[in-house]
Image (cartoon, rainbow, N blue to C red):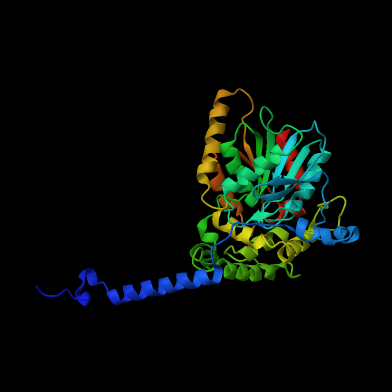
Length: 392
């Protein structure tokens, strides 16, 4: 019987290339282990414990995001680390939970929260893990499971009833919109009204840049996390420099996301904080990059695993429930309110209208205002008016 020749293998397989590729892969994995090692689960503390104890009262007041920027601050101890939350407004007012975007702390929704309190609402905001004054756990994915757990932990920390027989309205901005929609799909009896501001969740894949896909998706688990972290940190810092009104691009990158959330603040109608009216989101995010060791990792994990794309299943669940409920009711049909920016370069107006109407089965009301993706920061009063008119 003739000997078997590797060069005559079936289907034209070049085995020497296969063996060489296997060797390169093995070497790469060894190098990765040497460079990064096994990831030790740990809680990365926020500036609340790493920075604030070193500062005087005056120095705290001068921070880009002072710890008393909003009333009713509390720190919620959890297995994932401490969560910074703010709850204020009349105790008997309509309860409203607000969830912020991917790169900013919750002060980005300060103008909306203050405006709703002026209307008599009881509001509750919190910093997502890895943002603002919330810790983050480096071994837990920033996906809808973690975000749902964080919301429930924050609700449970209140002295007022937010669950059980009590329902609340939820407002989500950008990434927070995707989080709010997914949460509502699981807990419809807890949510009396869903309001989404420039929400993620239905972002069409062709808007994501090729460079970002390679950096976040294809490199995950291959390139050492420490190298990725440093690369992303450098990329994130570039749009925070004082160069306003940068031209937008067709493709979405982490730079355009942050720039979209912090731009055009000079046009703001109302301050984000009544106690510190001069604070800006641009400065807050820059400070966060420098002083929150968990921020970049949390940002990267949210890009990889958060509710940014392919959330149609959750939205359809909401739409179907609303259709069923509206068919059985003689009252005015219940709908989801979606508020968008006419000039949003991240969440495109026409695409959002088409995709959201389809998955929500037309159980949706749209309101678009003259703004970009930063609309709750620059157009807080307009946002509050849209929401209040919808509720009334």
